[in-house]
View 1 (cartoon, helix red, strand yellow):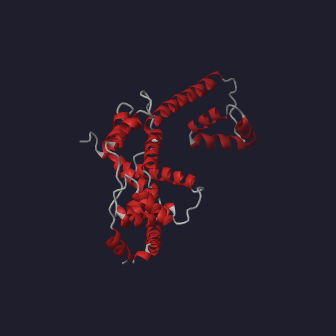
View 2: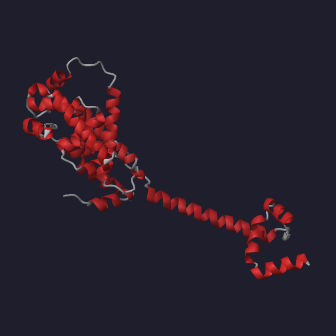
Length: 181
Length: 117
């Protein structure tokens, strides 16, 4: 299905003769997982699409800085998360919402690209209440069940720091959803 | 136990979906934004180029030094401290240092003893 393995994908990205072909394959291979990470942070499909495209364009222009000392996926995740945080940083000046949970739930339930029920929408609303960096940690651990060591490599945070962040995130979410218990 | 409670009630499924054919067309849309003939010089390739430039520069530098020594009219060889100080400031310092490196320890001792006498 894919022409390159992880190892020779990195080499192919370094070689001008195979660079474009390798990059195109990289986009096809990693876009679904990157899409999921971004979408869980920003909720909107259109915003996710913009951020995802920016992520890959940034990856292209920064190929010279990728030395292959991390996995391609790790490198792309880092770019995607930075692009997402930059996007959310621009959004934070929006008018505050009186009832964030109701707003997010209503938004998701009316979104044609949301496949969940109201319970899942409430969970997403709770996740949205977390600060962006904590939200990233929670998403990677809770939804992707990623190991702390792998999260540490992506986010550049210590395992101890991640465990503390995740523990606090779970407490906040449980408190947010406590009306449902 | 809190995480398990949340998972038991709310699950951890990915509830987001994409428009039909989204991923199939995504790579075409991204590659269309990269000019056709554009390539990115990677670190490996950049290092090679700079290595060649650095090597050429070194060859020029050594050649220049050797030519300078050949055509130089200043054949002074300082043997005491005052002259050594001057030599540190002179343009022929490097050439003199090369000359010193070629002198054996015995020769240096001989010169020193000769001066003292």
